[in-house]
Image (cartoon, rainbow over all chains, first blue to last red; front, side, top):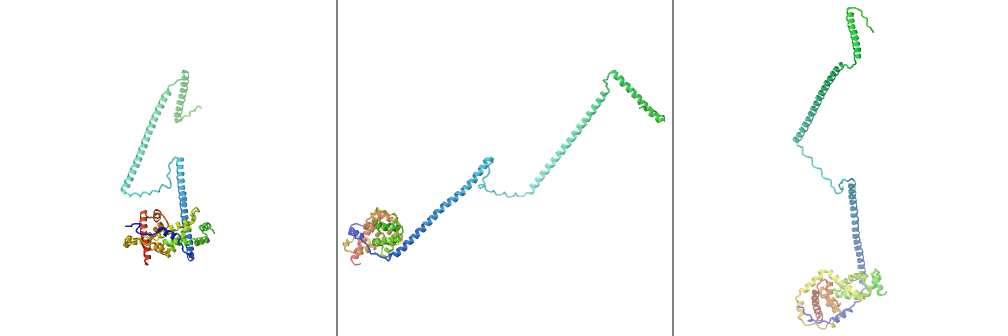
Length: 207
Length: 184
């Protein structure tokens, strides 16, 4: 083991000796030293330029990122504003992705045929229904017209009956009777004249 | 140019002032580097590295502190950083030396002779022969007068490890001196 004191060196005198220890000037060292100083200067300048370039990259990246974010947010803000004014929720353009189109369905001929038949039968049924309706309407119209005719005839008959009933005064009745008699006589004359003319007799017809 | 002017001009990148600063403090700074490095070659490399580091930190220097002391602390920190950058050398060398059984046996040997008889180069050599982790903690705590807590904090180790390394370094240093005295 180490045991202090097993060796004796006067450390104080040793220190004094070494504190005053110097060597003579050596000029041959200076050119080498000068080169090393210049090299260290270059290295420090290069290190600083590297550091500054790295430092410049960070704010540049921040600026680019902020610009991108600004544009994105402005788009979102505008779309939100539009949706608020129109009261219609519009999708955000950037965030909504175009959904893939669904694949076309496999054509099933039987299903298509069934579908076609169904539509055809429905159309035919509709046509028949319309025809029936038309016929019914025509029938109803005919019946109604007949009824109307019958009613008209009845009414005419009634009117005829009623026209025979006179509401005239006796004087007028007498006049009318006279007129009728004269008319009838004229008629009789006419008929006689006609008969006579037919017999070859000239008959003078009063104006 | 006065010292303050040299310092202020050097911090602004004035080459003339930097050269003057180099001329003024090369001796002291190189002395520190020689203690912390394993040889003269590494000390020169360490000095260049530490000087560049010091120039970069020069703008943080305040006048209320003695420049000499500030520069010393700055050089020590740079030296430790330089050694720690050479990780393989720093950690492997320490591990290899710790495994040597002979180093443990040396604790039970007789105390070394008075080392004051040795010249400064002998001390520097004895220091440079220490493993990097022992060398740094010995330099920091014994020669530069740092506390073990501060040294451990600078070296990123626990205080106990720092103390343990310091004791080991003390013994290894005395042993190196003993070996030098014996003419090895």
